[in-house]
Length: 319
Ligand SMILES: NC(=O)c1ccc[n+]([C@@H]2O[C@H](COP(=O)([O-])OP(=O)(O)OC[C@H]3O[C@@H](n4cnc5c(N)ncnc54)[C@H](O)[C@@H]3O)[C@@H](O)[C@H]2O)c1
Ligand SMILES: Cc1cn([C@H]2C[C@H](O)[C@@H](COP(=O)(O)OP(=O)(O)O[C@H]3O[C@H](CO)[C@@H](O)[C@H](O)[C@H]3O)O2)c(=O)[nH]c1=O
Image 1 (cartoon, rainbow, N blue to C red):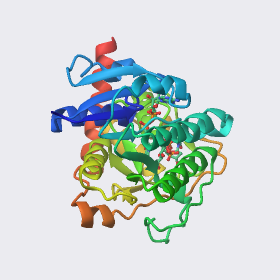
Image 2: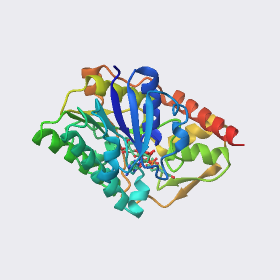
Image 3: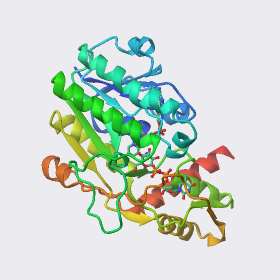
Image 4: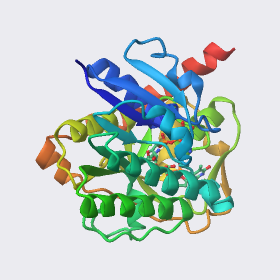
């Protein structure tokens, strides 16, 4: 009998890519629970909605009464993608971040504690480590948590809850912390899809501050492969960093996309900086590489080409 996973947030960017990846690269059955916020799109699940290994349950993980409807069996694992994920929104209003990212994770941990899942993978972020100076070494799993915005603070809080349940209740819980993802199905509020979508429509592209902030970009499919490896081979109680090894300034990212699209840089519009804007993220992925044999396989250049193609196709289909 194939094993059943509970995936949360599977109507969002990475969750939907992960379900697509697993349905093609494993024989797991998947229950996707998602409350379909502004970020969760029904159309992201259309490629597999009719699969007999897939079901969808609309529910808010921050409300245990709703979550209970999905806990009708014992799952092999919970993989928790569900989150409020956008830093700028957390600066405007942190309340939904506390609800979903902290209370939601707590409810899922309670589900594991009550025997509804054999293990859980918490999908976390490099942002929990804070910000690096240009010459600092990359984040390692032992780097102290130092979140600087309400989003990253809520994710760090969730990580600490996971750690505590792992130690206190001896539950098989694993945390993955990944760098900036890009690829198909990402919401256009995020930097790379915003650049592509604005450039395709000849709309100004807002660049925060001096544009020299650095992110470590990873193509979403590489992240999904890493999570599958952690699910199948990861050790209980461990943290695994996942990075793309593609550090770029925001200016470089815009320029690369404008070049690919043959658009002029006059579209770039310098705007006021983000409050508390982290300067640089960089991940050391040597642990997952050494212990589980993962490494990124898609270069930034190829990943951007695939992402642009996906957005162009989507724009074309909508016409
Ligand atoms: N995008 C990145 O670059 C990145 C990098 C590292 C880690 N992460 C983490 O990966 C996860 C997924 O990120 P993403 O970019 O796909 O996010 P996303 O915003 O695209 O998707 C989040 C999904 O969660 C759902 N959701 C939100 N609140 C919910 C609730 N209360 N109950 C049930 N579902 C709810 C939304 O409807 C949406 O489908 C998040 O936990 C994020 O912190 C993201
Ligand atoms: C939306 C937007 C962003 N930016 C800048 C801010 C950042 O330095 C960089 C990337 O911004 P964002 O796409 O919002 O991503 P960032 O804040 O790094 O956070 C992302 O990456 C994190 C992992 O590092 C994830 O945990 C978050 O969920 C995800 O949203 O681009 C701009 O200059 N202009 C913009 O319009």
